[in-house]
Length: 275
Image (tube, rainbow, N blue to C red; front, side):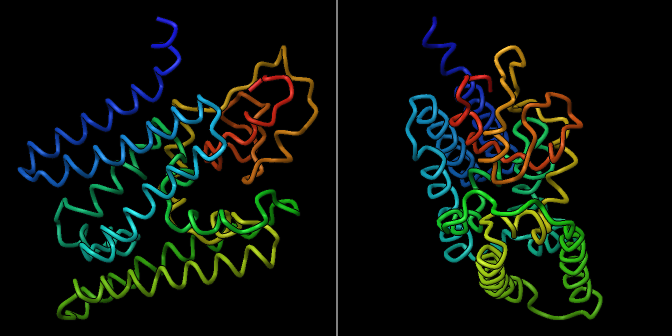
């Protein structure tokens, strides 16, 4: 019974992903959805199990399993634009497929359960940025987060303009937008990381996906919580947090609360095991 409780969280998460996989498989009559969500759910559950077993590469293993699958298989091989432009494209065409389902599950409704877990365990942009040397921000967060609102609007305007202009073969354009967009994301993300000495600078200031993730993350069921009786307020959790979150505050209004990516660096580094 103790072992079952120990692995309850990854088991529950895996069951949720399997429920989505089976539901979409039966409703859409497409076995791809069974494979897709089963693969992602199993990868994430495996990562959580490895974390429970104190494997220091647990999160990185999940990032590579899911991130490379999304980038290489879905993006380059299946030619699906899984970035925000692809979401707008399928939304405008009224097709509940590929990117729209991905966004609904991972970035719009999913964060009600697992918050910004997408950013910590599945994002193929962050997968590369986390290899850079600035895992702990060298400077306080800057007040330039408004840039992500600009990139969000620009992505919407770009796809809208294609439809309004009646451009032909938009699906091919979406594929090339995926390639060019990824190159731009990596280039800007790496440049920002070195300029600001912060691997996650792109996530904090540029990434348009956070506009979907943040609202639902406020109500997330999975959150890092602090045992205030054990906490000695040493501040180490804040210093190792790549997203500058005050995890010692258990309220939903804690500073940068919707920025938490559940990387668990704070949990691993807490000297009193208060998190």
